[in-house]
Length: 195
Image (cartoon, rainbow, N blue to C red):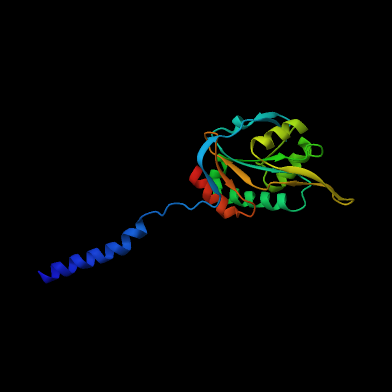
């Protein structure tokens, strides 16, 4: 009888340590998850292929949308490099994700310039441009600040801009905002949850 009692106690003690190992911890998102996701503001812009595309063109994929420009000396290349790392981390599932960069410098960012720039980071990434008013409307819809600043003879003018990544789920809902500096590993982990 004592052996049965000891076995039962042993079983309970083992259960207290093993069961928590079997239970998945909830994912802790790296970005700010929107508590009340809304349909992401729609737009129509010119892709780096020269085609006109809308946000709806990417429905069924998780969209990682960034606002930047090809002449950006530091923040944009760093952000796009982390997005490329995230794509690598996702492996085959990267096909279910579309990274897009909306140019905040449409005067210099032609479709051709964007195509070459985005290909440097990942051939699957898409650059989007448009007229000044089209870009301003999209930026306004997402609450993105940008403003041209005087640069140097070497750099030309620079554009100050918000450096966040907007996460839009497969249904077209805006679900998360990733801050500048979020690592590729963190981005990939969050995207897996949205996939």
